[in-house]
Length: 428
Image 1: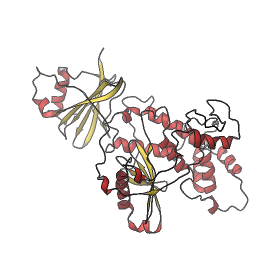
Image 2: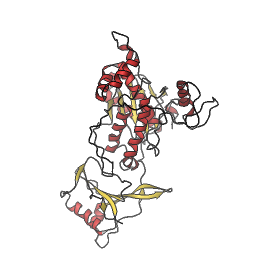
Image 3: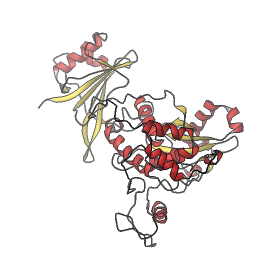
Image 4: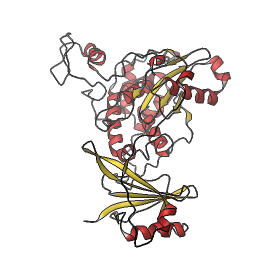
């Protein structure tokens, strides 16, 4: 049985990719592999059949090898799969191109022992320089039907593009893949998209698929009135300091003198929330944003992010600033949103604060969907607390629905974003 794989090439600051129709490729110890490497080193301008790509493709479950030739750095990286603690994990062997190019065709054994790839070692800040932050408490409230859909879409999105996230060579702070997928996660958490059946989407997603949607180039940018800061990590207080410094450099001192700025700090694995003012910095405890289980279980970090971007749990309500000539109950707004086309529903929510509140509390863009369970937005460990209330997976709910949701959210959820927010100064 033949091998499957693809080639990545980095030359003059640009990325290119080549693969055959069925992904056939020669193994690393094959003489044809060595000839291909030498040809690319000798004639890097001869790229007939290669396609220009925004970033390199990672190892995929359907591939055996991925060869990444970086002519700018003078290295060859061979990505493959190897066993670690009883499970397959991406591994890589990196070599200097100069040594390979000088190798004789009679001695083309290139591959040494694969090295397992781990997330990059981040943030070497001196802990003595870390400032102490005041306690920041936030009540995320009860999730809405839209939040439940967001949680399920999140796991689907992670599952589809997991080969980019599982590979540490692409899922790292300095990789453009991190910025691309962060943009998608933020858009999903804010429900900032239009549901349409007219899109020509390439399906199914395969090893050749590339996330090509637009994304901000920088590490700091505004999104739905929040300042997004992309950071290598946010687990320790010294890392929060780095994100706060980047935010202050971006916005300047004049804005902080008159307004508080709310930061959403996202790293490849965690998310944190910071409220920045001229006098004080309030920081939350970091929450898990992506883990090995995110393709099947919605993370606490994304649940918190969705509540922040679709509710008034962190920002002040604005519906009272809107005046209508007649009394408009919320049920009327819900009926209007339900009858509008998806694009019109988005426009209506952007034109009215009251409509926006109803828009985020329902799933108006989906006409025939009724959310009846909250397994993604209210996960439960199944343990009883002595309040004689059960999770829906254990038994029937016994009290008023709203009261039970509060109990489930605050008592049953072992990994709930509704947990108290701690003083970041306790992190070491």
